Amino acid sequence: MDTAQKVDWAALNAHAAGRPARRLVSRAIATAGGQRHPGVVLDLGAGAGADSLQFARHGWTVHAYDTDDTLAARLVENERMSGSVRFHHGDIAEVEEFPAAQIVYSTYTLSLLGPEALAVTWQRLVDALPRGGVMAVDVFGVNDTWADRPDIATLPLEQVDEMFRDFQVIDRSIRDEDGRFLEDRKHWHVITTLARKLR
Image (cartoon, rainbow, N blue to C red; front, side, top):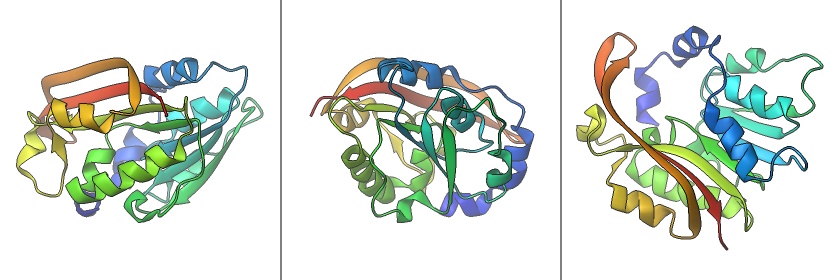
């Protein structure tokens, strides 16, 4: 992942370590059937670890993937976790087969794989989900500041819809606004999709 070479992910994740889990975590759990029968989650680009830990607190077994190997220390929690977190250090584009899971979860990560690697990795993630499994993910849209970078996948909405052709889309939100990334100004165009696999 070329983009990973250009950002100090350890510093970024340390800065974000105190933030709460995203609301998308609870929505993904609810879509997957709630807390009655927790299963396996793939958290791709686990970052500071808040989302992985939140899944684990609700009883889920989490496979947390990240290129930042300092993340492992932040994924140590106390007895409040009824689930568990297993950390995988490395580039998710190099994972040939993911564990079977009921939820695939990723925020601000998949597009960083680049167009070719995203296409290959996406199919592997779809294959990891059974019928009824949940996909809760972000991708960057064409209005994003990084749209002119060949190492980042920025997708038109039609292409995102094609990626979810075998899913029932439960919810879709689009962030299209100016903001910041580290010290730089940035326009964010982020398409977030929560969906259930149909077959």
